Length: 415
Image (tube, rainbow, N blue to C red; front, side, top):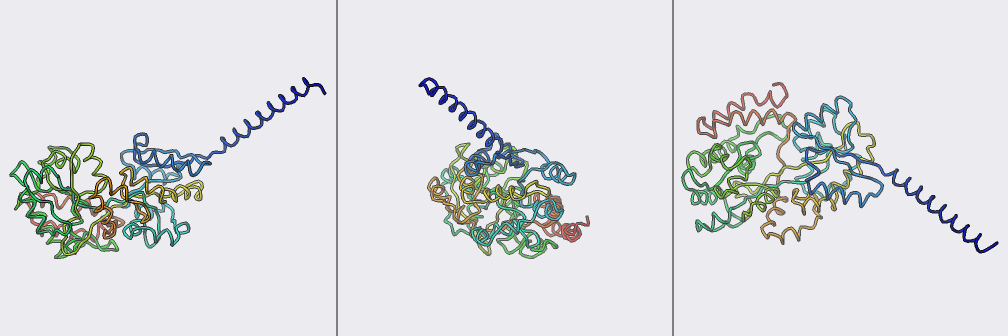
């Protein structure tokens, strides 16, 4: 065989190899499976979702994560999709207060067969209760928002008021709020008047909103009434909390008066630090002041598997990743929220702001925000009946009585 012939043969073999490899590579690319995740966030601008997608695809090269956004009225729209048998995504973002509703309607799948004891034991205690319905797990955690107290450093320093230590009490808090208040122009504290805005004060005083089974109101307890009097007095008697019309002149967000240097203290979670940093507001963090007991409250956002998901095992691969140490590390580093797993490294997080330790420590003594099946209706009732109370135009007792009168039927889904 001539040298020319040999060269031609080698070239032909090389071309054939390239064609085969190219075809094989094309087949591999074609086999990459898309996994759809639905949420209410704008995924093009959400750094946490962007990083979660990149890390997931790095760890799962056979899969591609595809986000779908549903905006206003998210929960209701998704329920309609599920009820109507629409082509459903593989994974769905869900707030913890919606988990019981979706589970009760059979709109999300029980994850009991996937979640093992090792994983449960690695969660902070506050998390597990937020993901369960009737004793079964229906969700995995996205992140946690646990309450602490933010202090406006400039306002404290300008007034010459020392920062409280971590063992401060309700009495200490009230005295500090008075020192930082200037009538109708500056206030010591602000809290939003919806249920999550004042629930932690109730539980610190051994009161509450609803019983653990979600069937009865706890607002009539003497401890709840005492806590509500304390909060009403801060607004009406002491004048250390702005009325809503005063607070909202600085913006619609809970942190707006704080950012405007008009409110010296506000309760919040990790996500609040993003707005404070973006607006160059220097802050100090302390645990919530202690009432009759030390306790904080937490809200847990979650990920779920919708009914009718095409491939449950594939959905679980995504859910398992979102709840993993790697994903929860991203959750923490991007400010999405606090991590649900105990083994997430918080060292760098604390080093960026030493007071961040109070956010981490609060996870050990937090309790979940209550999520009764008909909680949305009950919480709307509370907010409606309490509006005049916060304005000083109705007594605490009258407002609570108005709620108690309807509570049992509302919590039973009969109104």
